[in-house]
Image (cartoon, rainbow, N blue to C red):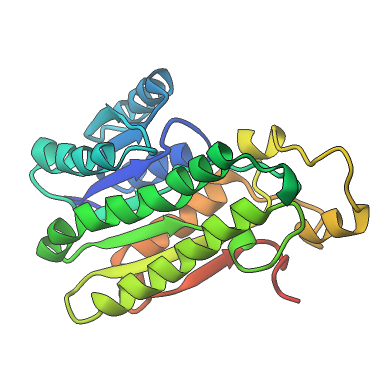
Length: 251
């Protein structure tokens, strides 16, 4: 039996990268899905793949900078499928800059997408997840677990996601909702391929951002961890910040 049969999942950032891989993994395990992303063309392409797997899917254009969009996206999943069992907050952005060069609008956009959207989606989803005995998997990062040069904004946003996860897990521990965070290191996605450091950097500090293993994770490997945490097999895991970073944060 597929482990997500009769389950409904909402996946943000589903048009590419880890979000896309997560949507496909959940669908292959029997979930019905509401896919959310600002990239509508990318959403439709992923939806076609999911339909080919025989799973039910709907899409919604989603602006992570909008609290109203967070609320209406959750409601869209419930309206379409009648319930919500799993929320996967995967939409995110990443960039590096010297702290003195970070513009206010860029800082605010980082926080809106990486942190505030997670809060507003969780807030809107909680009543539905409590009704279904569901759970949340938030996407944090190895950058949320260690200080990193030139990553002030990104580290701040992802570290806050970890503490939001732990706080919600505690608050809902007796109400039947589990909340966990996944903390990837280097993953072979478009975000990683397009990631650039400031022109003037200390090379020894930059090297601390990478795993000691001579490989990167694939998006599908991170998706497999998300699927495990979202499943009943992980029923005793809540409030965890689970690393998948090739020992990057082990030391």
